[in-house]
Image (cartoon, rainbow, N blue to C red; front, side, top):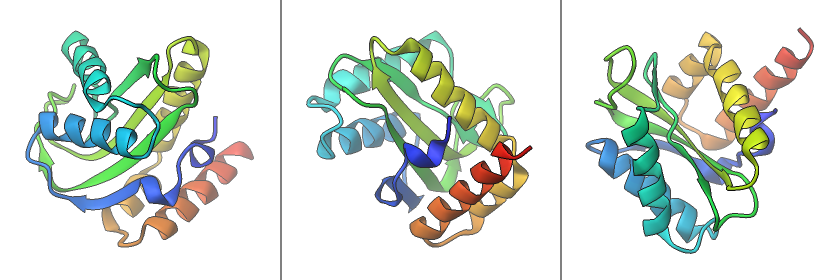
Length: 156
């Protein structure tokens, strides 16, 4: 699953000041609602928090992947956020998080949900991706780099 096909440059946010996990989840829910991916930000917020309470989506290496299934969305939606300052995200490695890849998928598309999470995981294993996210100042350049990396992965 190619992440760049599900992510647009307008959904890449760089140097966002959010102080904790709760603010990140609110930002994600509000952004998806503002952009029409869901109707009710609060319902999505509740779903994302419920998922975090089951087990943190802080996967380590400075990455958080808050995700949820939603009855309000018809298409998967993805956000990439680089935080201005690292925050505690209850990550598996206990280290703070500065990169957020947030995902929502329709409730009835579990297989697609897993495919997208696998694509995110593959991308996050690439140090060149993580380095570029942490250094770039331009969302369009980041989207192009994600596309380049994923196209390169496809040939290996």
